[in-house]
Length: 243
Image 1: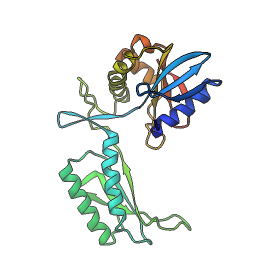
Image 2 (image 1 turned 60 degrees about the vertical axis):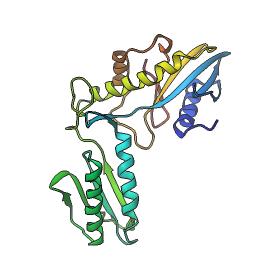
Image 3 (image 1 turned 45 degrees about the vertical axis):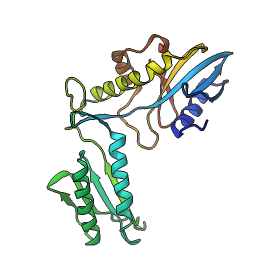
């Protein structure tokens, strides 16, 4: 079974962390099987996600980035080779407003705009020409800055602001345990269960640290079979025990 990119990355990082071990793809579950000192370890891999409240439910920032990324690709097709643009999207928009934003950005690009322009007077959304520094060449595309600002809310009981980092991490950890805990509980024939939480290499969260993740996992309630078996795999390949 072919591994997903985050699984292959986690496998390499965890192998380097443990040292003299062997590993292979698992039966899904688990994602990976490690042999450590003659013991068989079942290893599940997941990626940490930031969640925000949307329409009475939840949505992950990964989905937000995917939407903005597709829009960026379409808009980049309009950009001449001798120009470049930066589009900042700092709040979540409905699908209807995303379409309006794309049309607004298209008009700006086709008019060869240069100075910063805000979308509907919103400071969190703007576009401007990307002026190359020194002898750099124009990008010939649209670059994006996308993120959920602190005035959004976490879909927790307190409706915490996303500016509350621990609340963001708490909710993300809770979702991971709810998803992975039952899968690992069904496994038999292994000497140890391990959960690797990847902080995405290309689009990770600088606020996610071993300390606040460890605190969040303790609040979420780590299943007994995962005690001393939860690790954070950061974007640089470093591995830390967090639960």
